[in-house]
Image (cartoon, rainbow, N blue to C red; front, side, top):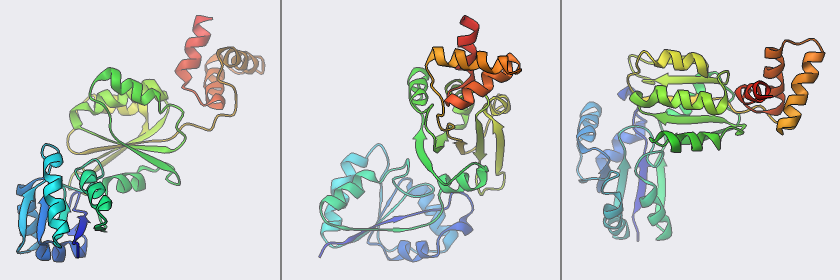
Length: 276
C-alpha cells in the first residue's frame, strides 16, 4: 500500500493559532519535509512535540531534486508531512511539485487546514470577498510588474497579492498606475502578530503611507474593477466626458464618472481629454 502525503498549515503569527491536529501529525509522521528546519525546530518546541520521524529540508532551491525522493517514501507506504514557514504549503510556498507527483502516482493527498494569510487578509480588508483571485508575488522587475498589473486592470474580482516589505511602495505605485489612484485597497502587515496593522484606503493614500517605510510580512488586497457598462474606445470616452459636462458636471467629475462607467482608470480618461 502507498503512504499518505499530508499538507499541514502552520501559524502565520501566533503559535496558539496552530490547528489542533498539527501536533499529532508532527509527532506521528514518518517523514517531515520542512521549508526551514530551524523554524520547524522552534515550532515543535513551542508545541511541546517530540518528533520521531525523519526530517528533511524542502525549499525552492531543492524542491525539484527532493520531490522524487519523497515520492519514493510515499510509494513505500510512509506518511510524509509537508510544512512551510507559515500558512498552507503550495500557496506561494513549496508543495505543488510534490502534490502533482503524488496525484500522478495515485498517492493519497490530504491536508490539515489552518491559518492562511490570503483568507485572513481578505476577511479584515473590508473589501468584497464574494469573488476573489490570488496573484501571489508580483515580478521584481518594474517592466514585468507593470505588464502583469496592466493585464489585471479589468479584473472584476478582489485581488490578493503577497509582497516583500522593501518592495511594497513600488508595488503600490505600480498598482495605482495600472488600476487608478482611487482604487480601494488594503495593506495587511504582520497579520495575527503583536504589531498587526491594516491600512485601508485608495491606492494613492497607501503609496504615501508606504513611502515612510514598511516592515514585516505584507499582504495587499485590491478591489476589483467595476463592471464595464460603457464603451472604452477613446472616441466614446471623450464623448462621454463631453456629454457629462453638458449636463453640468465639472471636467474633473466628468472624467471620474466616465472612467467609472467604462471600467477604466480615471488617469486614462484624463490623458485622453488632455491630449484632445
